[in-house]
Length: 116
Image 1 (tube, rainbow, N blue to C red):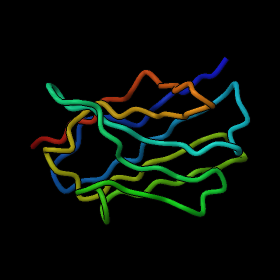
Image 2 (image 1 turned 90 degrees about the horizontal axis):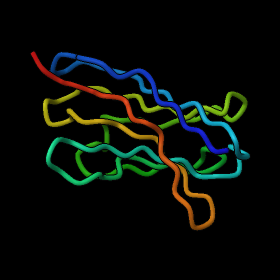
Image 3 (image 1 turned 120 degrees about the vertical axis):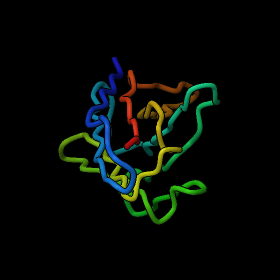
């Protein structure tokens, strides 16, 4: 079955950096676009970034542009999210996501807290 396991979250000071990882299994990873979402307390889950199956096309949303970078290693079935210049408003649970036909799969999420 499809499994997505995120890691790399934690507590970081404003201006700091974190690199999230998502290890995928149970499907042909290199055939699907991968996404990172986040959900802050009291807010709806929002798309952060997407990457095409071969990694050539990457899209970012809103204030994450220029600060976050999505990448993937198809040999390792892993997608990454490098987050720089972190702000308190980036505090959220970050989720890895893949859509396979009509179904969306999610990991358990990893908490990112940006605070001094």
